[in-house]
Length: 210
Length: 150
Image (cartoon, rainbow over all chains, first blue to last red; front, side):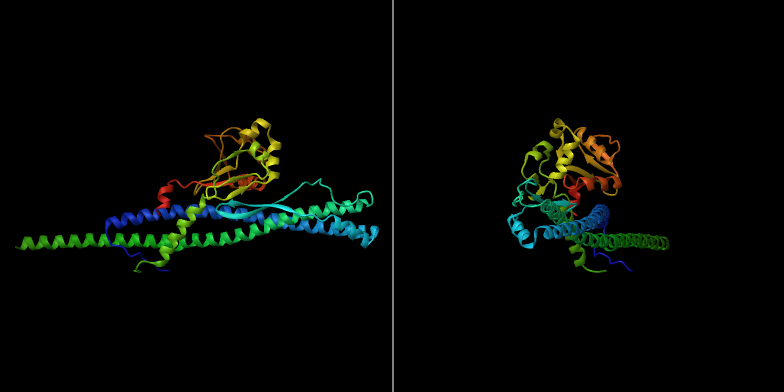
């Protein structure tokens, strides 16, 4: 593909400026490439963690539902529902953000005392209800972890595609056009030199004839 | 020859923004682990005004590895210096505590040289896996003034 030339005056000063710009562009390209490789590394790691978290959550859900059905059989639906109504409480989630190589991703953390009272009567209920409570709390924690991971994955993916475009633009547009312009200027200077030489030769011949 | 490529200008603007965000997330100050453990919501303020949140689990994990005196010496977040075009990265540290923590996490000896611990990409992945919020990247372009004037 022919490279687009930057419109500059064919002077030595412009040449020096262009060479400086080229060295800077290649340095920036290195930095952006490093950033891209870090983002990809983090993305892959988060993707792995997301798969694991999803699998874990599904296992915990199936376990919790199994325990719930056993408890429902033991207590009866109406009694269980009555007990479960008392367990409702507000959740407190601390939200913030963390930064991975310029990409800001969310951070969630469930706040609260794990050993806090569950809300139901321990004496009247069976250990199945305790088990459901424990499993549900685990599920809740994992849902929050999964939410964080999935949103991170999405944001990192977007950032990677953006950075990739920048790397490609530098690699296939900016740097080649700078190189092509520098080459063009070199050729211009050489041409000027040749013109100067032939002019001097011509003058010499004319002087010798005269 | 094309006159004043608008795409070139747009690209330069884009790059300028890129370099601006690169190190904007660095913390204004690092806090000792002991202080962070005492805070209700452990966090530090970053240069761009945002707040970097630490996970309590990570802080507790770090605290379990070192004793109380060392907890005061361990400054968080730990900074991982990324040098452009190089495969190795450096963890910036003040004392030996960071070396102790890193060697325990990576399960290999880590030597502190000129306030830096050199690690490579596979080790970085391991480190970031266990210390997500307690480490941060620091991009070190050699001539930052030049880069900002690009």
